[in-house]
Amino acid sequence: MPEFMDPTTDFGFKKLFGDEANADLTISFLNDLLELNPPLVELSFANLEQLPETPEQRIGVYDLLCRDGNGNEYLVEMQKGRITNLEDRMVYYSTFLITGQARKGRQRANYEYQPTLETTHVSEAAEVAYGKSTAPVIAANWNYKLKNVYCIAIVGYPAPGNTITTNHNSIRNDRPPHEPFYDKLKFVTVDLAAFDPRKPEYSLDRHLNRWLYFLKYAPSLDEVPAIFKNDRIMQKAFWIAAVANFTEKERLQYEHNLKRLRDAYAIWETYHEEGRTKGLEEGRTKGLEEGRIEGKIEGKIETLLLLFSQQLGPIPAEIEASLHTLKDPEQIQAILTQFMQIKDWEELRKLLSATPK
Image 1 (tube, rainbow, N blue to C red):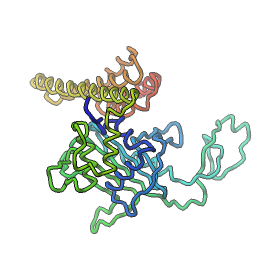
Image 2 (image 1 turned 60 degrees about the vertical axis):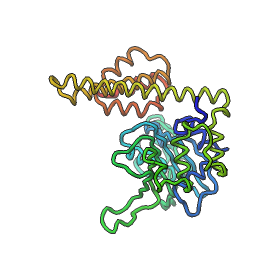
Image 3 (image 1 turned 135 degrees about the vertical axis):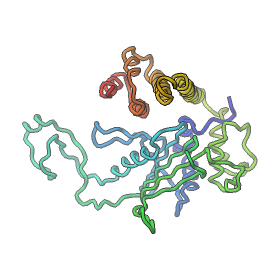
Image 4 (image 1 turned 45 degrees about the horizontal axis):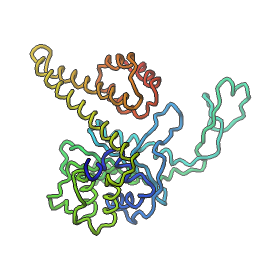
């Protein structure tokens, strides 16, 4: 096993940046990346599952979510493999943080039928008829003032056409002079594939570049590079990443995490290649593109089977058969992005039954 863990794995990233004991690392990384003024000096870590207003709404799950002393929020996603609609996903997750800032008032009964916004007396018979639950209401005197929200995506694969490591985006007018319309919601992407320490602009004299070097190259190093020797923060990062310092439980968790990633990647690559080969072979009769699509679909289904078997155990035969009936790549991708929220086979059955074949 390498000297240092891969910090871009789910286990590695959360061990480094998601632990209260390592808040100084998280503060350092965010300060370097965002160049905040004034800089962060304290952070608190939030529950990674932001519960929505109703059970019907989907739960947002993040790799890292924290708040500073002023209530500003920082959401960080680490994407080891390629994912479609990354920008849409970032915007979608940001909505949970924005709506969660609404000032809450007292609890009130929440009914299936609400004729007015005012709190009214409802008889016991009405409560039985409509069903009653409690939910917070937005305080009447809230003026909609929001805190800053930063959505950060770190990707370990090359973005098409991208030649820079970091992109910072806010909501601006689409016509000159392109002044900011809203500057409290900011999206930042970090493309590790574009980071090349051989280029002058990525000199390790800049502390952000040290973080990017660590994230990209730590698992391939045998020792801490000399340039990091007097850097207390980076020394601590390497110490945490040292596999020799893991407990037995941490070592097993990390090895399991690595195995899941390698298995999923191997299956994906195999079926991608088979899909391309199948497309070439069937190109004369049914078209190159159709063959590629079929192979891509099978690859995604096999990835789903692997992930669900590792998360829930042996796959029931009827669920495996149902998955193999799916033909739409977007439907399969939708299930793939939700697999972490599926806690048992019954939830998956319901999801599959609601998915058009």
